[in-house]
Amino acid sequence: IIFSQIRRHQFLVSFFFLSVRHCSLEATPRRQGATGIPPPPLAMDPERQRLFSGDGQEAPRRRLSGVGLALLAALLVVSAVALGTLALRRGGWGRVSNELRDDPRLRFLQLNVMPDSGLPLTYRVEPPDYFEKLPVSYRASGAPPKVAPECGGSPVSGENWDRFNWQTEVMLVSYSCTIYDAAVGSIAMGVAGLSEDAAAFWKVLDQGHTLGMGNIRATAPCRGREDIKECVDQTHSGQCGLCYGDLGNTSVRTASLAEAWFFRNIADYFAFPNAPSALCPDRGVPWVWVDFKAVLGDNAWARLTGPLQTLWLKHNGDPEEIPDDAVELRLALSFVSIVSRMVAGDTGGVYFCPHNTFYGWVRRDLCSQVSVENNVSLLAGLKALRFLLLRMRREQHAAVLQQLNTLISGILTFLRTSWDSQQGYFRTGGMYDINTRTFTWDPAENFAVDCQTWTGTVLGSQLIDSWFGPQTALNLWRTTRKLAGYAVQPDGTVKGVGYTHNQADQVCSGEWTYGAANWLMVMAEESGYPSATRRALRAEAAQMAAHLRSALTVPVAFGGEGSNLSAGSAQGTLYANKRYLIPPAMGGWVAYPLPSRASTAWALLWEARYNPFHLLGKYSSNYQ
Image (tube, one colour):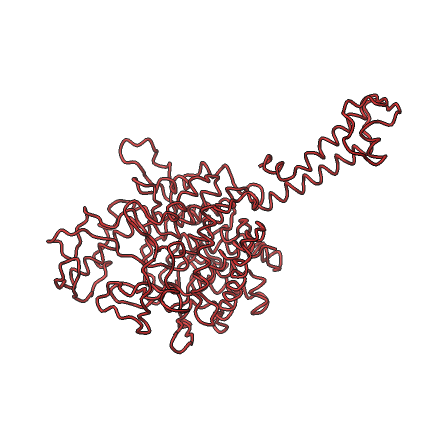
């Protein structure tokens, strides 16, 4: 770090030697012409000539001149400013803590990977027989009979489809690399100073394939949007391709290889020969990967926030050291170009995923959705990229900066309109109808915790309060913990949060609770609320984090018998305290009481007091 600054501030070095030299001249007898340095090559003014060649007068021994003292004092001031600037760029001294290197949760991130490639895994199925012990009632049922191409075109019973859906749930949890989880895990490793480990995942994305998946990008050429009958896919085989946005013709709506979004869940393999498909077990065909959804929020973390954070940390917050061809920068810039074509009409918000993306066998249309949380994730990444490019000061980024300003302005408009003044919280999103060019918000009762905590973090309390009135952000937290709080205390504080309305279910999410604690720290740092209020916010954030450390952090065994890893050498934070089905209106996915990459990464970021939504790691929503 020091030598990097020396290269950038060479005038300081010259200044230092000049001041030291002047002090040494004053500390010894000086006679005319006895300076010990060669004459200056160029003409100087009389005062500078006197300084370098002597004035012909005897000087007292070991006395520092006023000029020398002034030079040294100025050097100290300027050096302090330079080092302070570096500290600011890095988010403050101590952001990268050596203590994290010995944290058993960091070891979990390093070890919870696929053995053949090191691809990060989303979960650790611990104990290994977790799914076998679950009651049969937990398994989805009621699938209708229909034809499965992998079974030779023969009809498959509803019972076999139910078995297949359960098999798919187990396989996805066991072998998935969710790109959001991998991204936040990479940030945590970067904060811990493991720059090479942190950068490994970006190389996987950049190459566009894994060990056994030939393509992890949503590159299928657009042949028309199914939702407006431009193309009809009667066999549901994906023949209409993926269409990015509504502008231009099918060629314009086809993403290039560099632009195309990544599928949210990837794996080392496409086919699993050791796991015969439950659809037609008598045929012996292997179970194959089924989750091919390119989702905005996951890509925002995997192509903006994650890569930019680790890039910034790797180069010690010095934008001049960042090369133009950095993988991380390439991922970010190519993403911005396609996101600009994915804006939903005049809403300012960006679509959830490309057109012709459907959810499961129910064929639920996802392509018209505009999600608040996903746009908040995008906003954080766009702000970070804008901050970086402005400090890199390179002419080739001028057009990108214009795109960033337009996107950021549009998303802010969308988020402002997502506020439900009657309910006192942000909505989850809505659907844009390309035919009528109208937007319909999701029902007001659809309440999602991350639409409050992440939105509050990225927008900041000052902006929210300026939009909707004094202390709106503070009241938003009070509403959130009232609706979704876990283990409410006598003073009204909570030990965690769930995912949505939580009074009856009392589920506690590891990841989402750390996200809430992070928001409270941002609010405490940057709001103008009374000091007592800010102290209470910090205390409640610490209370939630302490609960997660004691109740949701578990030892995780790696290596099996004969391993040299002790039982407590790795620890993971559970995704949730119990198995919980998020309501269908909120997405219908399952939270598991399993060690989670996302939860564990957030735990490490909490220990480092590092806000991943801010490029400097600061508890702030802005870069002023």
